[in-house]
Length: 105
Length: 225
Image (tube, rainbow over all chains, first blue to last red; front, side, top):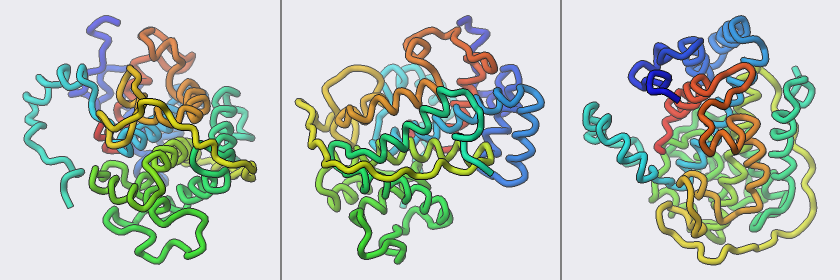
């Protein structure tokens, strides 16, 4: 995959330049709030990508609901490559200076 | 409403989700089918009490019956993992394991809770009913142990294998792997795509769209990993 096809994490909220990206991000966000907002986002995704597209997007949401619980539930550390790969971004954003919610309370 | 079983959605997805509960209904290495289905039921009960803050456990809030089939620590673990995964700490883990027969019991609990949380999330997102819990399959746990398993990189013991850390997390309960792999392939990516085919696409979504949804979902779930 070429570099210009990679997801730009800094532009995630706007869909990172991915087709239907903004719509998909808003759909994922609505899975947390639920209710009427989620129903409306489902309709929008279905209109843009078809019912099969909605199903596949919801399946990815479901999958990472699982992976989050496996990783966080077992104390899974970042892989060494991931730590090195994200060092520049973390330094630029100052993320390393934040305290994780894990270590509060 | 109806569940995914009556939805007509793609068969691999329906079968993988059905397989999660079929797997939960069977005895694992350390818990019986009845106990594993009780964990699945607690995932659903936890969701009904999602307003319980992470610092309150159901067992101390009077929400666990004295005659529950699971130890109180197991119910507390199910609820916390279900509702507040981003708040888990090593100290919390050690406190929970102290109330269970072994760390292996805890790892198997995670291997049941996480996939059940996943298929229930799909139902919730799609506006479907959750898949009904099946009846438990009788049988005793296998007590299968993994040679060389020890605590190295994770809180939990892992098998001495290579690969991504998240894929090692449940490596001491390998009998859970087939149902997990089927769900991973149906909900996210098949093995060939996981192993490097970055151009793999579903008919409806390309790889970048899939990864965008994956990244945003991990973000809103406050995934530490």
